[in-house]
Length: 438
Image (cartoon, rainbow, N blue to C red):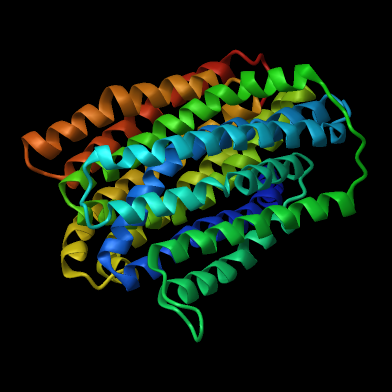
């Protein structure tokens, strides 16, 4: 059994390690923005915190739909169906989503004034969102191509591009925010422009790679689009439910004070960095389980799931120990604002426990993506975050005066319930697979 665990762990890591590298790179691009904004001013950090909270809620829906590409194509490969021909349908799907998202963001920008944020940061929020709206085409093309390549277990180059762009983003953001030589300081607008450039570089690099590496012919298959919607809509809605739950905290508390929105963004940035590791393993679980599911190899399906879940939880336990041991140091990396530090440090202890359950739930989500039963993930997320987390958090925040800490207690309760629901469905599914020995 020890040898088989080592084998399945190695197979998962062959896919997951480059994705971890890329995922960390992707989130470090956001962390770079937080770092530069925090060094500029608390108002700048508060403005991009609120803007990205709103944008994440919009962008995430399409990203969730696109995340159906790798499990669908992995299942096709397991069934020995041709999969490379779905390149152009994937691109067309991504472009349509990008167009819709761009229009939605442009329609929302004029409504920001009605949300009654701090007048000192409202113009910066609108400027950041306006520029970012036009980067959606790059965002969705990059996400679609990364998913497409991942289905064929081509993961090194796409994620290397992301890592290299971390440095490009920090350099561009720093120069444009603070100015350099003839380049003037343009604050929040500089952060948006830097992100805009970096996103198109990332998308362009993957497009060039695909055309050089593979030969494509135009192809259309309406059933593929239907499958993407059938598998992707529940994934998308589930991610959206969770993202809104996190980002609405920044929006609600941002109306109380910009420093609370900044604290939420700062803490979420740190937990997202650690979350990238189990998320990458979850992607690997989806690909490997998807291939095993397509080829009806239920022994491999069980073992990839079990080993992957163990890997995710083990990592997050280690991460929780780090977060709870040196919270002052970690928060101090991003800000020197005493008020922001005072708010953020207590949250780190709740966050440490939250991470363990977060690692478990994302690994289970990867399993359900692989077997194309994504409605389970949606239902569990909706119950945990919207029927429990937000009501509990709001009550603790405003009726018991715990402010942002109250919302984090609500998020922790949601994570526990979410894992309980998904675990019960996971064991039920395995019990129904048959009599194969695992």
